[in-house]
Image (cartoon, rainbow, N blue to C red):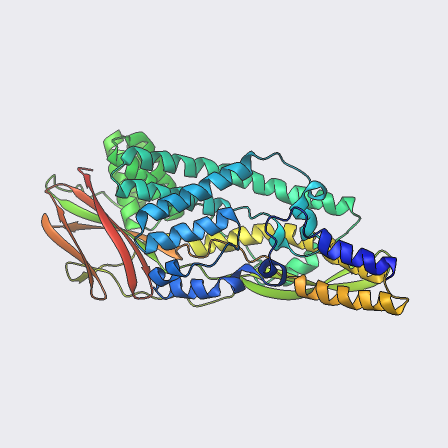
Length: 465
């Protein structure tokens, strides 16, 4: 056996088996969306309980796997298990965040990714995903009547989102620096010009769901100043949501914000002060789940080490353009409820991907060049030609897009407030019913999550707010 063939085997297998935490046959020759499609379709169609019982083995790593499990358990009404899964994901994310920053060339799993694909890199959750992790932990605390614990989680969510944003900006600078160090001048612009999702920056980069929910918790806790701040942040994201508008106007009056009251009335009209005995229900309505990331193949034009103009094959993740699922309106006491959107998670996911694409292109440029240079060293003898053929097949099969994302998150969230009579009330959805009682002058919040024809929901008394 020639030295070239020996080196080929050593590089292709020994290196892969050293320090690659995410190494598996699935991650080597396939991608996340393909491996999790069965479970995803079950959740999308409202079969969360079946999806929970058939949750696949570890695919995305300790953070992503537990995010998915926690969400599916939540939709299956296994609330204690859901909380435990989310806490495990939080711990894994904290360990990842606390680790020392190391360069691409020094990281074992990054080295593995340079001869295979990005799926061998440890999954780093997006800032919006970290925000939802703590939002769902907060909802678990609220369901267990622990307002203090719920408030701690929303504070974490706001802090971690800002920190994750700064970290993501560092990732791109690090990838660009490594590309220059390796002498790779990737034509990123040529790729992005044809990338399906690139366009104007999406305005929805803040989580209106989180802001409104945290404002509601602060108001329930009589922390009106913090509630007012978060309600205003929700209003900036969802300026046409009537419930958010009313919340901001209500708190502005309570805090005596005369200038704000005047500006709010100029834009939205005079606030209608409710009677002290008026009761109401606030419905937080999650609809659908995110689309899966798909596989997009294209050509990367660049110059190789021998001065030849070549085009390499790349595999990138992207979101297909699909029609959003339309849900039958919820009913409150047999009357249809108009949805009032407060957050669009699909837009947040698309925006996050667009921000990460340049770094992905640079990493793939490094990888395809390294693969091709290795292949070009084995062309002379028959054994070398065999090694060349093996490497060509290996390179093609292992070039897989990184389609990892928390894909069971809701697609869109609405928040709607409705005046109701005190006493017994009911919410209905396709034959499902949720009964609750409310006192004079009190408020009840109902959390709803709908996928297909299935619904998961519960309610909590917020008292006089």
